[in-house]
Amino acid sequence: MPGAGLFISLEGIDGAGKSTQARLLAQALQGRGFEVVQTREPGGAAGAEEIRRLLVEGPPDRWSPETEILLFTAARRDHLERMIRPALDAGKVVITDRFADSTRVYQGATRGDLRGLVDDIHARVIGTEPDLTLILDMNPDAALERGLARGSGEDRFEDFGLPFQQKLRAGFLDLAKADPGRCVLIDASRAEGEIAADILATAIARLS
Image (cartoon, rainbow, N blue to C red; front, side):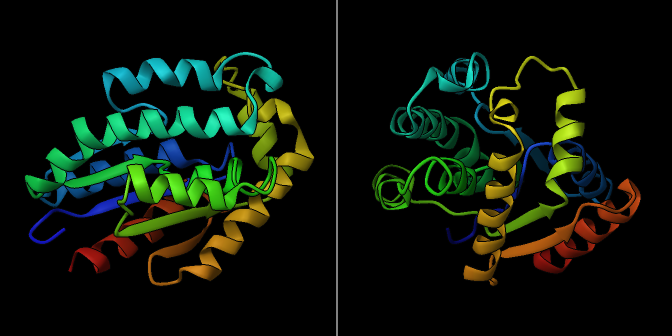
């Protein structure tokens, strides 16, 4: 996207600390004079937030993987049209807690062999990738315990259990290996401040 701002996504398993690190990164970049939009998926725009509730609440078997792919893509398209593209066109830094990589891993790799379907729909409907993807990696046992302890009411994917989180981690590690130019693996088992410093240095290097 010539002349546009920088698009950064944070990815990883549930409980890895993405929301916290997205907030810390946004604050740090704002402190350095960058115009920043911090957002999340599913959500980030009014219609997408309504779809979010359908996806993250309720029992694990509420939707089939195929239905989830369509719902996530609908939310992502609304998010892209109403928030992400306008912000990038205005030269801002967009930081999102999750983007298409989550659908590639959650629905495309762990809930059936649906990666081809995910990629096809993404190419036809979204057609956008982040400039930089920070994949927060940590032990699934610790991440799941942290995620469930939040008691947010948005625990549908945590409720799939530890084997699901282990598959997710493997999926994200595979993504990092497959696209090293875009994806940077971050050790999320460290202290919050250490992780934030690592992420900020990576983002500043890309912005430079």
